[in-house]
Length: 445
Image 1 (tube, rainbow, N blue to C red):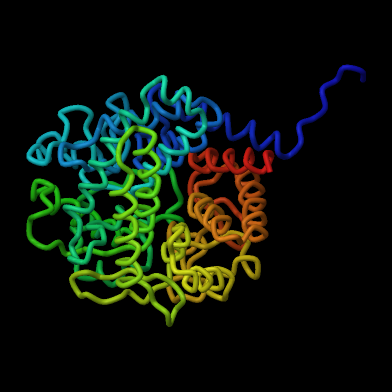
Image 2 (image 1 turned 180 degrees about the horizontal axis):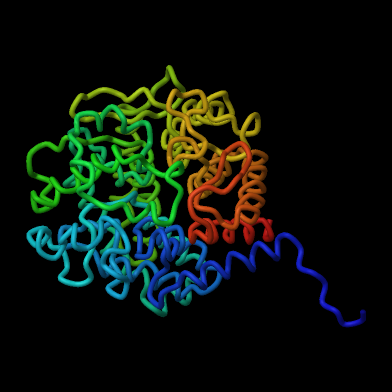
């Protein structure tokens, strides 16, 4: 019929769906990962979400990050959850009544409002801020975005490098399995074995009200998570307190910190500050990362259990993330690319998205959270990393699969790495945001 608008194609439907998810999950000041399972603001989620939001509204992307920065503690830490007071206090566990940030964290500079958790997540925020700025440098300058963000970001990195160098060699240690973002990774099994879980029945897991138990961490995992968080809270969130039972140097956390130091160098230049200290710090951290965590035998970066001072032999996708670094020794970069396509991660051979854990590992499970499923944020980072190191064909193929599976899964939280079957929750914000980012990058290519 004349004048009838043609049916939208797959790419247009993906973009429409992604925009709808980001619109529906917007609270007015930030974006929840999902209204049911994650009804508050999460730290690294907001960084990834801002990367997608910059294509819809640069101002809204700026606000996403600035809302998070208002919850920054006096010691520089950016907490992993910022609680929305309009949400029932028991809608998520552990919630504000567990963390007691404004009282337990007072000595560390926790704000009186909003209430937050006391632990952190990977420092991807400077990279996000830079990408938001690049989307519209004129609007960024007009709103003073980088001028406000730069001191927040330098304080955040300063906290990590000052307070979290548990190993004494310059790298950042996570003191809780939730901090690297890969909550129940098999990399934590041996370090967590030292932790006595809280008794069963002493807490209620709100996550199981919204997600299948087979997709989520076990009750034993949660008992140990709660024990570590309780002990940290009861110490006043003091990092100078006694050595924690759990302290791990994670290659993903440290790679994202180094990538964000490179981003801070560019932000510093744009904000009228000296970029040289950030470049020097990125170089020092890259050297420390290689010295402490590179395993030539496995062709991967491994986690280091700091109290035991040993490398953890489990192979995780976190060990691939140093491929993001521009100054990685070329021989290591080439080896990581081979590992990515090899038998342990199988990209392009047995899997179409990179799994979170070793396909041949004894703990591999294609359904359970970070023990095997593919996550869209990890694959977005690796697509970027492959492109950085000239692996254009592999990056293009990975981008195509991210877009196909994000749309087909209803923007799932994570998916089976073999089939793309949705796992966890759907209408997940960072999946929508990062798919939108890749779709628009492909359209411009």
